[in-house]
Image (cartoon, rainbow, N blue to C red; front, side, top):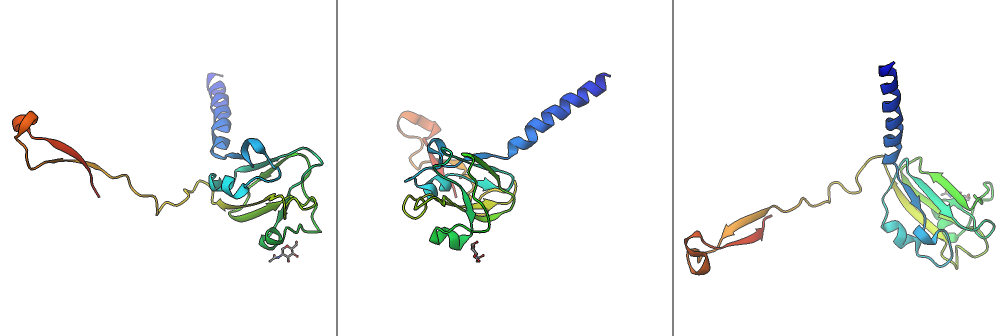
Amino acid sequence: MASKALFIVVAFFATLVAPSMAKVHYVGGARGWTLNFDYQTWASGQEFHVGDDLVFRYPVGVHNVAKVNGTGFQTCTAPTDAAPLTSGYDVIRLAASGKKWYICSVGVHCAVGGMKLVIDVLPEGSAESPASAPAPSPVQWIPTRNAGRGLFGTFGKFVPRLGH
Ligand SMILES: *[C@@H]1O[C@H](CO)[C@@H](O)[C@H](O)[C@H]1NC(C)=O
């Protein structure tokens, strides 16, 4: 019985831990999905991965969320064969890597109001740019030439230098 209870406890915590790897991105942060907000600047501060959720929050009936391709993004044109999301709290699970485009297809909210978002979804669990991240420079302690003088006596004076 004890082992069964333990199993249940472990399984419970496993379900808590595993999904926590995936992130929830509230589009626009506290501003939500709205007019005259710079979604590209917002997106540049985020790292999107497969398995993460995008959440679009807005007053029902005021805006919507249409998934488009690159062309639809440029021209602010939603596909006619797919209905946009309209719940006011639209959750989109990022299922595949690559670029994803979303617009509000209400009136000129995309073309004039700037309600357009493009993100680049990275594979699950990957780092943004593993090759370009610089390794932290080791700090070296290098004795100066005039060791032995002044306050520091015969122990010399040490200055921090950043190594390469
Ligand atoms: C983009 O989406 C539009 C509307 O759904 C469609 O007509 C068009 O063929 C698509 N373009 C590409 C390159 O997939």
